[in-house]
Amino acid sequence: MTVTHLSRQVVHAPQPLRLALLSFLAALLAVFLTIPASAAKIDDQFRAWLQSDLWPDAKAKGISKSMFDAAFTGIKPNLDLPDLVLPGEKPKTPQKQHQAEFGSPGAYFAEKTVRAVTSGGRTREAANARTLTAIEKRYGVPGEILLAIWGRETGFGAAKMPYDAFEVLGTKAFMSTKKDFFRTELLAALEIVERGLAPVGAMKSSWAGALGQPQFMPTSFLKHAVDFDGDGRVDIWNSTPDVLASIANYLVHYGWVRGRGWGFEVTVPESVSCSLEGPDQGKRISQWAAMGIKRVGGKAFPASELKTEGFLLMPAGRSGPAFIATPNFYVLKEYNTSDLYALFIGHGADRIAHGDQNFSGSWGPVGDLHRSDIAALQRTLKAKGYDVGSADGLPGFKTRRSIGRWQEKNGQAATCFPDAGLVAALK
Image (cartoon, rainbow, N blue to C red; front, side):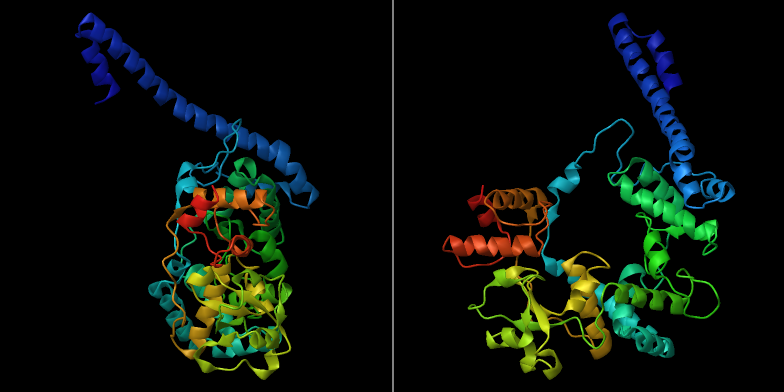
């Protein structure tokens, strides 16, 4: 029913009903008038912010006014983006995120998802063999690692980048929960177009402002993107050699060790505590082996690895596969700070190189807790003196091993993963 039709009915209604309908009509009109006015107000504040706040910084970095204006022509804040804080408001924790269930880590390795990367990777490995060989020779990063990242990030370039990078980065620099971070990225995006590395119209991104097929933030583009096809320009949107070499250059920058893989799936005897996990508790792989840790499938650790450092990795504690990771695993985490992401890339790379074979260990029935429950558990452990990292409701390695240490201290078998009983015991 339109407002006009409703107003006609008010005239013929009884007096009490007429008053109620008039009140409703007034409230309805207020809604219609307020929403566009509020959006318009934010648009005006955004334009003022661009000119009075952002432009002086951009000018100081050598950005021309013509380029600055071209980047923001027609740009308005995108209020549908996540993690925004409207002008004058304080940050809030979304109820949906607060109550979201944390599922089993095994869900991250759904066969359909992994196989899309591995089968696509093998196809592109054959099609780009010469390029991959040349990149590995220069950078020392195996081609299967580059293919796994490429496939995971954008489906080998098939994923659409529907956003304007200046819309996304501008909105988030103006009104997100991480303004400073996105301001830095926005200024870097302006530098990209100012230097002629990409035209304004090509700056398409994800909802987070990540660019091109490798999904580089603008600062990473400036630091790591390379021209590998020799055409005189860096193109991570369309050039496969530039995409793959840029990923390799990124990994090398963060310390990729030539000649080493990412890690090995292992079995961990009960005599070895799961609380020994983490990149700050490394041992020589020969020491782990002496403690009874073995590679799955009866394979021996390569002789070249025995004197090198490895790290225990148990993403689901005792309820999932276990691994001895190399320093290269933590280089992969520099691409995305998730243990599961880095493990996905390593596992995907192994399958691209050696065929589709899943983990030997199975993922147990863990998960189904609310993130708020895990966050409460983390806060309790922190209050007891344990280092859990961030109380964000996600059980990273610091939380996992702290759980194990608490369990051992309290006479329980260490599982190193949250469950309902543990949450209840620590309330």
